[in-house]
Length: 179
Length: 109
Image (cartoon, rainbow over all chains, first blue to last red; front, side, top):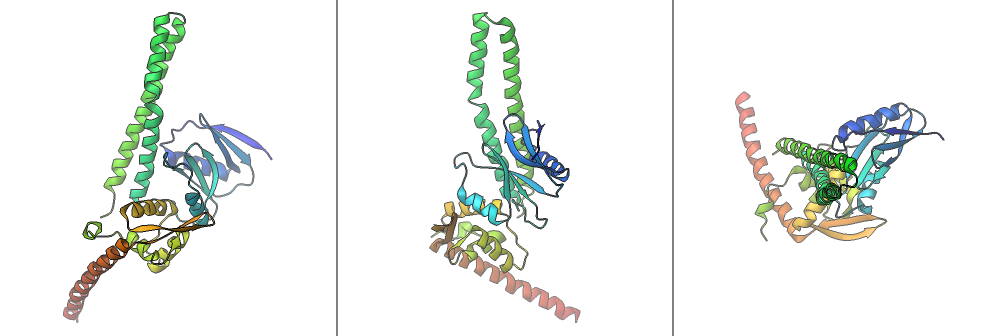
């Protein structure tokens, strides 16, 4: 069994792009096995197949719900990989119904994503600012301090940008809701 | 029981509630809704999972046990009242629609 690792740094809020990429990989015979921190995707090499990949996010308060797993399995979906509260679902049967069939539930998924992003970013802010401030004051590693503060700022800004993109996506979805 | 604030029910919610007349689990509800609506209403598993949570929070359905990792739900008394009220609304719509359409057909004849 051959294993192939690929990096994909597409932000997870562009889930449709990642889904299309995974489907592309499957068509080339690379099937998702594992997702690790930092955008590392591990594939197992096999026969080329037409598969559908979909990403879903669990509610951070509930975590992994057996009920949800069983319902998805009954409906024909298999979990290709899981990373934290992100689930990478896959199915090989062409007629399988979509996981989300209306705008409201799709919007709820992006709301969960936005909440996760906020939860990951907010606690980091005081810690990072404090660390950077300490480094500046100590004058011990001037080079390091000068590199870290902009880096920390960039990470935080990137997450905030993601949060904003998600709110935009949500607003678009909610506007297309049927009567 | 304040039934009015739940009306009008969406098509999907209406069918889901009716599918829970007797205790049923997620996938069974998915199949029942598709059959009952003649294939017009299809609910995905992710959507249904969210709908169950919402309907339970609204008090329209309740848990009815668990079997082999599948949670069973059923309508509550409030749920039944809401469905009955929605049915009443639909009946009014049908009667009115039939009257107008029949009148048009009568004119065309």
